[in-house]
Image (cartoon, rainbow, N blue to C red; front, side):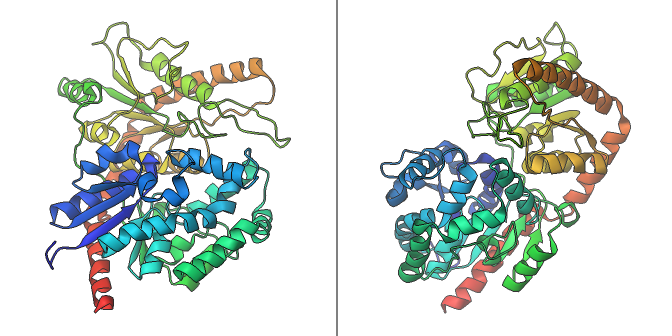
Length: 492
């Protein structure tokens, strides 16, 4: 590495939605001649290496946390929950109780790697990779947070909803942390061994993250007027910390699809002939294995008992609504329906996709949107929602939880589409089956209405024009390089 080149370390989780927006920043830095390293997880290795960055396995680099606790984040967390005698049914509460414990276990290995790499800047997810902020503090290097929620205010809703699902208030969580011996010991260890200051309790407003408060600045992948509002208390706490928040808009990468069932080629061929394209994706969480919100998870009622539709029932009903709306008996007839169904072995059990539908575990979503999509049935996750707006694509939002619900309301407020709320009936399987059948009909109706309504496409195109002026990757890279230059001066 020459004196004019810089070295960046990206620290990101296994969650695709948190990591994907970082990839175009990494790619651009590599194209500019800089050196980029990622500390991440094996499932994302190929995506990361495709940017030109060097991949480092978090599991291999951080044995103090992972050795004997499995080979991924979720197995590690499960082992820690058991080790410390926490309630396995309250995963979010356990995660907050164990946050400082995990950081204290991560830092020895992470600092060994950073000692070898000597980065100019550390960039990390402020929610799921809080060790990035702690490591930067420990070695005195600039830290940049990349927030993939709709601004810092979105965290208040996300945390509040997650805690409510586990029947714990923020005040109760504060007390649990303050009285949890392992957390108290970890806070002491972080300060004494690494010079990192963290609180045992939660003295800040709901949604506050140290990793945003301590960052040089935080990049948000949306527009300022599309961010979720911060509460007065949260705004006060971030102002007191001197937090700098920059909304750069969506961070979209180059075309990357090389396989994906040949999907991109088929979409482009459909566009050439004037054929409509309908994209369908319910995201990676509801088709995944996360407790409560995953494929087999089911929301809980006030009594703590499961109710409503499971992730599987919800996704299959939404997919079926799309099949009902646009299905044809011939592969070349009607709209081309492109569906991301996830990796569950029973994803399509009981369903018969029409001949004009293509179903794959994963899709090159940005590439497909860029090629041209007439309508996007989406769960409304922040990345998917922003990507649809950036490409002027009308939506039907079928939210499952958290920020997805907020984004479904934004879709209707912006006029870019309609929402179909998640059914939440009480009762047994027969009640859930009836609710799923009605939900399927509602999804079908919403899809047909949005596709027929020109006003939705016009509103989506207006959003795309606004987002195109936000700065995106160019602005994000410029800011990161400026942080590196400021860091160089502090080393001198």
